[in-house]
Amino acid sequence: MDAYIYQSDLYCPTCANKRRLELDADYPSSLQGIEYDSDKYPQGPFPDGGGEADSFQYCAQCRVFLGNELTVDGIQYEVEHLPDIEMLRMTSENITDAGPESCWYDDEGEPLQPGYYYRYCTPGCLPDSDPYGPYPDYAILCQHIIDENWPEEGATY
Image (cartoon, rainbow, N blue to C red; front, top):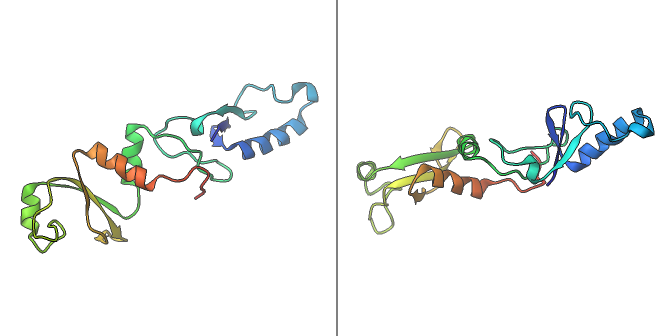
């Protein structure tokens, strides 16, 4: 979705156009739409939700998701702020110490492979699912979690 910048905020096309119409009513027709300062008039469109950012971008007025991509730091930030997800790095020793009755062993009693895992939790972080993984490194784990929990473009919060 395209994004527009106005007074240091991002706006969806619908809200930006509403604001433009409000502002145009205050300008003589010869000046409508020619203001190039984003503090005075919405600028854009900018594709892909305004571009890559460190967090998900939402319209400042209606809170619709603008569909931007995340930077590597943004992926890590968003994953760490998803509610009720626990991320773990499990070594062979951690898995052995947990014991065969734990979720770190499969149905045949074999230990899971070492690596990075995540699992969903109830509020307060009590495990509420089996672990998902293993992933070879933290970055791949984070990318997978984002892919599974990415907001739909146009969704609001």
